[in-house]
Amino acid sequence: MKRKYLIILSVLFLIITAGLIGYHFLDTKQQDMSYPSFLEAVEKKEVEKVTFIENKNLFKVNLNTEENVEYLVPNPKTENFTEYLLLKGINISYGTDGFTRFIQVTFTFLVIGSVIWLAKRGSTSSNLAEDSNKKKQKSSTVTLDQVAGNAEAKLMVEDVIGFIKNPEKYTSVGAKMPKGLLFYGPPGTGKTLMAKAIAGEANVPFYAMSGSDFVQMYVGVGASRIRNLFKKAKKSEKAVIFIDEIDAIGKKRARSLSASNDERDQTLNALLTEMSGFHENSGIIVIGATNRLDTLDEALLRPGRFDRQIEIGLPDINARKKILSLYAKSKPLADDVDLEDLAKSTVYFSGAMLENLLNEAAIHAANDGKSVIGKSNIDTAFYTVIAGSPKIDRSFISDQDRKITAYHEAGHALTTTLLLPEHYLSKVTIIPSVKGAGGFNLSIPKDTLFQTKKQIEANIKVLLAGRVAEELIFGEDEITTGASNDIQKASSLILNYMNKYGMDSDMGLFSMEVLEEGHDLDLVNKCRTQMNTFYKDTKKLMEENLELLKNIAEELLEKESLNQEDINRICH
Ligand SMILES: Nc1ncnc2c1ncn2[C@@H]1O[C@H](COP(=O)(O)OP(=O)(O)OP(=O)(O)O)[C@@H](O)[C@H]1O
Ligand SMILES: [Zn+2]
Image 1 (cartoon, rainbow, N blue to C red):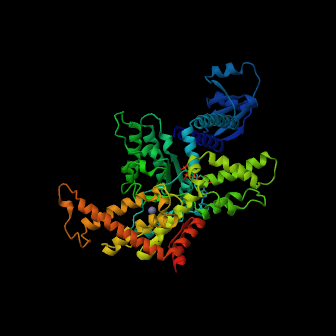
Image 2 (cartoon, rainbow, N blue to C red; image 1 turned 180 degrees about the horizontal axis):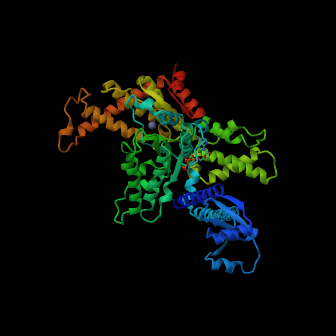
Image 3 (cartoon, protein in one colour; image 1 turned 120 degrees about the horizontal axis):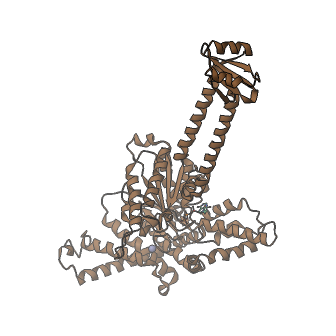
C-alpha cells in the first residue's frame, strides 16, 4: 500500500517539477546584453538579480523592468566586479542554467525513484505469504477437458460455470447460485484441477489457499488472511476462491477438556462471515476441498455455505486410460507399452498416482540411458508408486475382492432394474467411494410424495440383493462382510414396514412406537421371518435372471463403472 503511494507521489513530483522548469524555459526569453549596457542598467537601478552561470561563464541578469526576459552578459573578468555590484546593493548568486538544472533534477529523481522501488521490491519478495498469494491469483487456463473421468461431478459443476458466466439467465427465473461447493474424495483425484477448470471455463480469476496455511499461526492471522483473500476476490467481481484441505480449519469441534483452539475457530468464523457477506448472485464461488467429509463441522455444510457437496472419486478404467494418455503425450513410449493394459492394472490409482507413475518410469528410463520409456521402466515405477500408498497395497492385489464386489453390485443393479424400473441408476461401480467400502450403486428414486407397499418391499429386496448375489455365485461359506450396511438399512426399513406404516396384514395397524418400552419379541420375530421371505424371493428372482447377473458383473469387472444405459443394454 505505502509503496503504491510513494510511487504515485514521486511520479507526480517529477511531473510537476519538469512542468515548472519546462514552463519557465518556454516562457522566459534569453537575450544577449553587452557589458556596457549592463553597467548602464545597474546605474539606473534596473537590475534585480544577477546569477553567475559557471558552466557557461556568463552572468544571467534579471531586470525589474522586464519580467520574462533573462539577459546574458559575458563575464567581464574585471577583478573588482563583485565588489562593484555589492556596492550597488546587488548580490551575485551562483547557479546553473535551466536546462542543466532540469537534467540534474530529473536524474536525481530517477535515482531516488529506483532506489525506493528496488528497496520495496526486495522487502516484498521476503514477504512470502503475500508473494505466494500473488502467484495463485493468475487466471486459470485449465479446461474441463483436462479433467478425466468424474462425469457426474462435471455435470454438477457445469451449471455453476454457466451461472458465473451468465448470472442473468439464472436470476431471471429466480435461481440462486450455490455460494459454496465442497469437493470431497481421496487425495490426488483432481479436486484442485476441477476447481481450476471451473475458473478456466468461466474465465474468471482463481484465488487459492490451503487450510494448512492457517495451522500453527498466531491468533488472528488466519482470520485476517481469509478476509484479505475475499477482499482481493471481490475486487475482481467474479472469481473462484479455492480452499484446499478445508478440514484443517473446519474440523468438528472436539469436546475435549483441552483448551479450545481459538485460532482455528476464529479462522472458521471469518470464513463463514465472509461467505454470508456476499450475494449469491455476485459471481463469486467458494470451493472447499477435503479428503475427509466426515470430519467437517456441520456449520460448514449448512445452506448458504458449502451446501453442494460433490464427490471427486478415483478414476475407473476409462478415466485411467484418458489420464494415462494425457500424461503420456509428452513422453516417448516404447512399443511394448500398452496404455490399455496399464489402465487395467492400475485399479485404485488416483490421477496424481498415474501421472507420477509415468514420471517415475521416465526417470528410470533416463537413468538407464534410454531414449524411450519401456515396459520394464513402468514395472519398476509401479512398485515405487504403490509402495508409497499403503491403502492400495491392501486392496488392489486381490482379484477375488474385485470379483466379489462386482457380483455384489451387479445384484443391487439387477434388482433395481427389475423391481424399481422407475429409478434411474446413475452409477454402478466397483471403485470404492470414500463413504463406504467396496463399490456402490447410486440410484435416484423418482420424486414422489409417498412410497407404496410394493416399492418398500422392492427397496428391501434391492438391499438384500448384494448378499444374495454373493451367496449364489460363491456359495454360502464365502459370503462377506460387504453386506453389513445393506443389512442394517434393510432391517430398519422392515421395522418401519411392520411397525410404522402398518403394511403387514398379520401385524395390523398397531404401532409399538407409542409404547414406553418398545421391546417386543413378537415384532422382532415377525421382522426376521418376513426378511427371510424377502431374501428367498430375491434369490428366486436372481436365479431366474442369473445370465443377466453374470453379464452385468462381467461388464463391471471390465469397465468398473456402468450407468442405466449400460444396464438396459445388457438386460434387454
Ligand atoms: N481426473 C484427473 N484428470 C487429469 N489429471 C488428474 C486427474 N486427477 C488427478 N490428476 C493429476 O494429478 C494432479 C494432482 O491432482 P490435484 O492436486 O487436483 O488433486 P487433489 O484431489 O486436489 O489432491 P489433494 O486432495 O491431495 O489436494 C493434478 O495436477 C493432475 O495432474
Ligand atoms: Zn451392497
